[in-house]
Length: 522
Image (cartoon, rainbow, N blue to C red; front, top):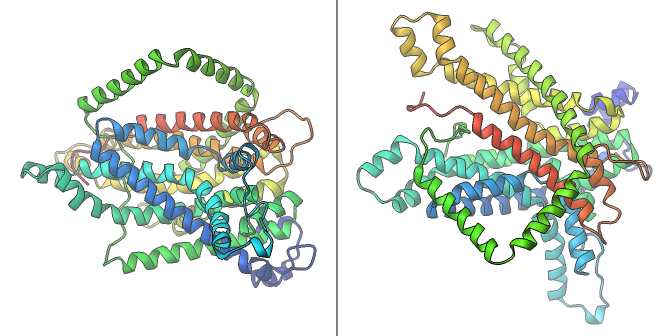
C-alpha cells in the first residue's frame, strides 16, 4: 500500500527499496523514516498496549458483574457498551481537551508541559506529571475500546450460558455462581486473546486522532501532521510503519497465546442471540424502565423534557450532514456487497480447489484498514469518490466472513440429515443454507453500516474544511468545531452523539436480523 501511494505520487520505483529500508527522507528537514519512527513507534505501541489493557480489564469486569447479577443488567450494559464503542474517538479527544483545559483549567502534560522551578520541583511532582502524561491518552483511547470489549465478552458469556456443558452442569445441581466462576470465566481467556489481537489494528487507527488532539509525540501525531501537510512521503512512511506495528502486535499476542498454558486459538464466537426468549429478562428490563420513569416523574421530568427538546432541535441542524454521510455509507455498502458476492461466486466455481487469493484476503482483513483509508482519502483528493476505498476495504472482511459461514452451513447436521433422507441437493440448500446465509449477509451489511458511519466521521475530521463553509458531513462538522472546543463543547458534542446514535441504530438492527444459533453445534 505504501509503494502504491508512492507510485500515485509519481515517485520513481528506484526509490522504493530505499523507502522500504527506512532511508528515504519523510520531512522537510531531511529526517529519514527510520529516524523519525525510532522513538515514536515505541510511544504509540505503549499507549495502544496500555489502552487495550485498560479496555479489556474494564470490559471484562463490566461483563462479569452484569452476568453475575443478571436481572436485565447484561442487556443494559451491552447497550451502553455498544453506544460507547460508536463514539468517534476524534471527538472524544477534543472533548477531553475542552473539558480538562477549557472547563476546569487543568493542564495536559503532552499538550502544555508543566516545568516548575527547580527549587519547587520534587520527584513526587515529576512522577505525577509523567503518570498524567500517559494516563490521559490511554483513557481517551480506551473509552471506545471498552465498549467493544464489554460487548464481545457479554456475547461470549451468553454463548457459554447456552452451551450443552452449562446445561449439563446445571442439571447435576451445581449453582450458577460455581459454574460462572470455575467454568465460564476460565473459558473466556482464549476468546479474550483473540479479541485483543483483533482490536490491535483498530486501535492503531484510533490512536492517530488521540495523539493529534493531545499532541503526544508518537507515530499517530507524525501521521496526522503528514496528512495535514499533504506530504506523500510522510503518509506512505506512516502507513509502512503501521504495518510493522500491526505485525509486532500480532506477534506479541501469538507469544502470549503460546505461553498461556497451552491454550489454543479459540473458535470464532458466533455473534448470535439466544434462540429462546427469556421472560424473566424482559420483566426485569420493564421493571428497570418503569422505576426510571417514576424517578423522573417525581423529580426532574420537566427539566428532562426541556433538555430533550433542546437536544432534538440541535440534532435537526445537522440533518444535511447526516444525509451526506448516509449517502456515502449506502454507496460503500453497495461496493462491498458486489465485491463480496463476486468473491462468493468464485468460491462456488472452485469447490474442489481453493479459489485464488484466499490467503491474500485473510492478510488484508487483518491489516490496519482504517489507517489505509485515511491515507488514501488524503492522497487521492477526490471527495466525490471517498466511498470507493471504504467499500473495497470492507469487502475483504465480508468475503472472509461469508466464506466461513458458508463452510459451516455446508457441514451442518441439518443439511446432512436432509440429504440422507433423499432430499435433492438444490432443495436441501434452499431449505437449510439459503435462509441462514441471507440473514448472515444482511446482518453483516447492517453491522458494516454502523462501522462505516464511525469511519467516515473519522476520515472527514482529518480534512481541512474551507473557512465558514457549511458542513457536508458529520466529520467535517466535528473538524470545524475544534477551533472553539475550549470555550464551547456543544458544537463538538452534538455531531459526535448523532454519529453514535446512527451507528448504534444500525448495530442493533444487525443483532436483530442475525440468524439464531442451531440447537446443536455443527
